[in-house]
Length: 42
Image (tube, rainbow, N blue to C red):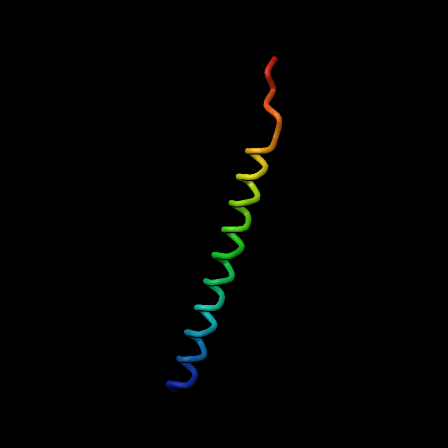
């Protein structure tokens, strides 16, 4: 019982860590795109 719970919590923690890393990478990419894209000065 405890072993299954520990495995489940470990998997949830790993999934949360991966999701945070992916979100941070997407945010960083969006920030760089915004900072390096040329502005339209018409």
